[in-house]
Length: 269
Image (cartoon, rainbow, N blue to C red):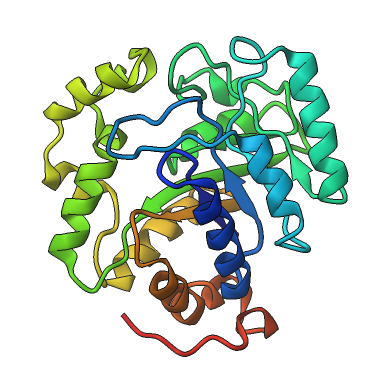
């Protein structure tokens, strides 16, 4: 399974996203996902950069890396012809290393329904859960299926308590119960519903703190479910230290200790 980095447009401004991409490439992450949202899930996240401007800037900063939108709505927000024009432009800037990840856009989240895995409109399947059943549903109809790619969040920190609190403050919406994440229409509704989610629930789902075995176990769950690619996002700050640790202890388990991680100091948990 290939390991990439997930740029969160909801949580970080455009300059921070570009710097994270540089650090990710130095750390040996192979490619990038970048989220495309009109507004964040809650006020604590605080950002929502126009993804096409950021991708244009990334093109000159990360030679050799592929960029995928995760995911773009090509209907309700922007006319599909404009999306096609933007995607074609980005593909030229990135010399073909661009993939257009699409979502239906009927609510703040999409591709979470049980029918999504059965749809083969595009060339691959994107999801944010290590769901082997969904992977199987996607791959079953065709002898040569496309790529299955996943995204997940972690919060590396020397202080587990701080990492838990940070994750709960910024991403409680990740653990909303039932189908709330699929039907809530606005950030205000997500903030209200997120009051149902306590810190323990978030920390149980998101690897928090310095225990790299827990980080690795969460990553391996996607590999065991049959994913081809996984994109990891570091919640909050500590990015330089996060990338040092992952370059030394996590990325080599998937890509080997090659020249991509040269120049970074060795870092433990």
